[in-house]
Length: 404
Image (tube, rainbow, N blue to C red; front, side, top):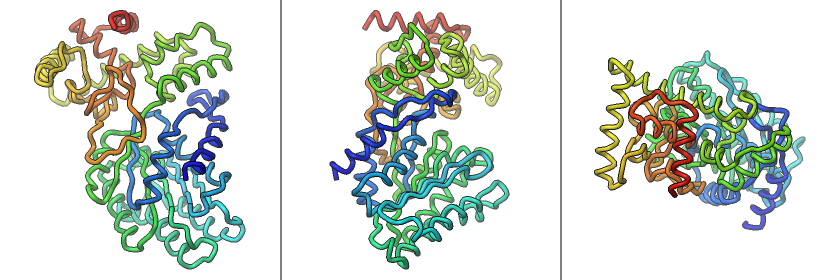
């Protein structure tokens, strides 16, 4: 199987993907060898509901799309059937079906049925109706595999519900995700279907809802790109856009390999790092302000003071040394998890598809989704005030660089 996976990765690495926010800039897909190997090793031997989560912009959707497209071109996946539904905010935006080794004309009826299933998903459905619409493809597949000679032997079926939390955010809440995932797990068991139903999510509330499945589900973590691959993408994008003097080390310390934020920097801010960083500071500030409003705390300064007191106590208890915003001391409190500033790494039974970097913004149980959040909060903690700007944050980064 290793040789087949190697060929799949080669095909994926040959793909050009749009830089988010700058659709006219196409960069090479990089890295992810370990993630593809680990993902396929598990889906070939297991079945059930899978939650694939990670920071917003880590590349979950891109990885799932390229894997689905790649297996159509690579020999050795004749036991596989790969279906991906990509969600928009009000409906399924795209349906893509890959059936390697089969003439599509001979199973066009099945493909059409799977694509048509996407049309049955909308905000107008009741929770019960939505659950029925989303499990329908699995029922269709389990029946087709048994009844159609062309599909017999397909014992590695992957159905991806990509960015489902984007839809559920508009639908009314993530409790529905738990119900849908439970219903999906029951249908897979009832029909003895060789299916892995993969829900890709980013919002922490959606992750928590999916995590309540217990033994019915599996959880996988996909992280941002590693440093070398990220810096290669930065240099490629900067070259295409004729941007010179890009500080790749600084961008690593601000973005930590997150492709969404790189696209926002290039497309929305024309590579102006300080202007982009000011937006990051505003996001952190807004999260703390939201915490204060809900708890009727009079000022954001008091929210920060409480965070510092709590963080110092936790850092001392955990033996982390001086408190500077370490993720395992902050622990996602003060609205930082809810606003996706931080992410929880300790989901029960979670399998890491990616190797996490050994950096100060990544802890054992918690991490900041991008390192800029860590540095912004650290600047606030060191100053004892939320009134910091981009220069203050960069000074904190440079001071840490020089002392390490």
